[in-house]
Length: 199
Image (cartoon, rainbow, N blue to C red):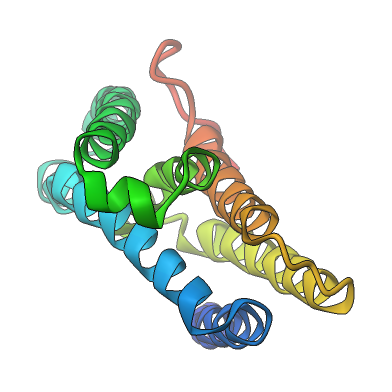
């Protein structure tokens, strides 16, 4: 029951942090800035979500009742995720480069920030299922909670400093989410070593 309540609180805080990001970005950068954020996010989220291939559900189906199989399959699934992230970054970058309208709306530095978000979108579809299969959802929730606390704190600092350069906003936003995602993946283990730690 305690774990369930903690998960519920984390989900509410995730929603709250999204609201904070929206309000602060709207106040600092207006409708035009929100348009840039929305358009750039839609590019990387589209390709990130498509490339996720719903691997989390596949892992859940294959390994939910077999501990040995979990330890055998997890490194392979992690390795696939890293490859998909690289593919997502490349495809999103090429889409931006080959789309004249996209290059008008988003400059190259802003696009680099958006590309940092690709790991977050690829992993967001699959992370919950993989952690659930390993019975480690509380550990994942703790990581997500810390990530969102850092995100809200960073957004409030940006607002207090009245940072008008949207690229600074984008890089901080993207780096916080990306670091949280890589932490989630990294704490499960290494695709090279073939194990995951007992956290």
